[in-house]
Amino acid sequence: MENDTLYFEANRSLWNQKTPVHLRSEFYNMPAFMAGKTSLNQIELAEVGPVNGKSMLHLQCHFGQDSLSWARMGAKVTGIDISDEAIKQARELNSQLSLDATFVRSNLYDLKENLEGQFDIVFTSYGTIGWLPDLDKWADIIDHFLKPGGTFYIAEFHPVLWMFDDNFSEIVYPYHNTHEPIITETEGTYADREAPIKQKEYGWNHGLGEVITALISRGIYPEFLHEFSYSPYNCFSGMVQGEDGYWRIKGLENKLPMVYSIKAIKRGN
Ligand SMILES: C[S@@+](CC[C@H](N)C(=O)[O-])C[C@H]1O[C@@H](n2cnc3c(N)ncnc32)[C@H](O)[C@@H]1O
Image (tube, rainbow, N blue to C red; front, side):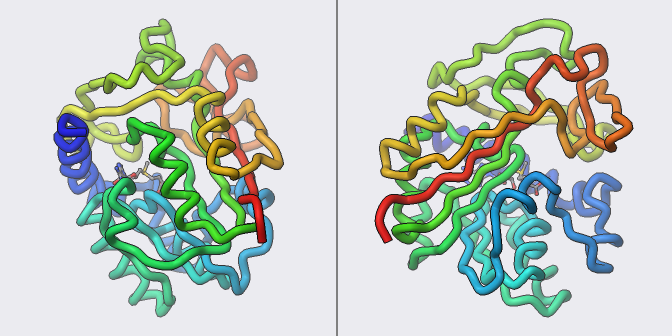
């Protein structure tokens, strides 16, 4: 965990740099969001279920677009993230939009020290668990903050995607979590490849069995695991947009799983 602290601090610094770039990017399309457009995708909108009046904990909320989109739908949202900049911006957006979401800056693993209460829904999506070395501890956090009978939901990029090099020409990383960080030197970000950001980042791959088993071992039982052959985001290099509007890897269209989602219920009520 001592090394993990160094990795978390490096990733925190990276996300602090990414946040202002993301706010200005076409990818996050802030003008449309501020004008009322949801940042949520059809996948999670269709699968999470009704949120009006429910309390929701949003893990790794970045600068709060999705958290605030749920808040606009009537959820009472608390978003948490390790990035100081992201949380600062999320709070600013919350006040500009006169919403009542709460944002907490915390490493996910330290959340018990920084937040109280239990929630009807715990939500996380797209590009989150790859920053976490240990899913048993992740599931412990979910269990701690989820009410008995409550819903956990994740939509995430498929672990098969993270096995490839940047151009999707070769398999270079293991499917399974080796518990050693995958260290990559990033240039730019998925939202702006030209952005002047160059820094090492530390990530971990998590196969589907690891994710599901971590949840079940805490008494959080999946209702479904869905796999999608498309991504709602144009966030990997060399993606092509289909007639359905969704994104796939050029040359590997409909051959690779792109995204998965899990909805799971905590035992008891
Ligand atoms: C890809 S973003 C979240 C994606 C979200 N779907 C979005 O586009 O707004 C990943 C987030 O995880 C956060 N993060 C990374 N490591 C974390 C950790 N250990 N604890 C809490 N947040 C973390 C980063 O700061 C970043 O905001």
